[in-house]
Image (cartoon, rainbow, N blue to C red; front, side):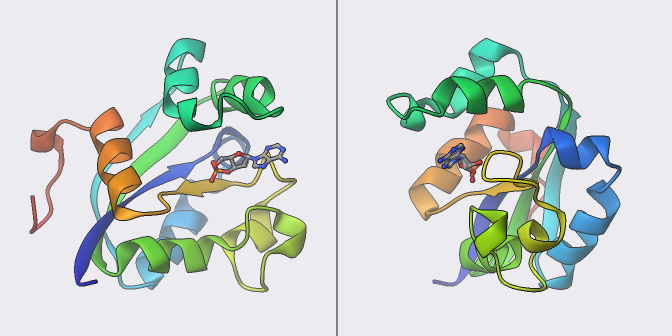
Length: 143
Ligand code: CMP
């Protein structure tokens, strides 16, 4: 385990509902540190590339159109066990099954509009972070 990085995305409906501040407060409350951040609006091509791992799934078109539907807040979290801490604070993918006190329980609408995304493993975190950030945009202790 030890110090890790995880990619976090605040999805379009949460940005639209002015929840960036509330969600960042929750994420920072885990003890993790934001070491890179930006607001951006993906085009469909970039959305498809980001979620390419899901391209065979029935929800791929809908998911990629949704994530490209408005600005998203993308950040890199760093700290001890960043991946599991981020996922614990996010809660289950389906907000109706997410534990009390989690971001998705409080602010998720449905399995697609589920407020946030977080990396699920160190390899995916490294790939997802490099998808959005250049090394010089990351201001962590561990490059
Ligand atoms: P996320 O963590 O962004 O990673 C992939 C996303 O696919 C997931 O969150 C959900 O928003 C979405 N997803 C997973 N399962 C379904 C589903 N059955 N229908 C629609 N979207 C889904």
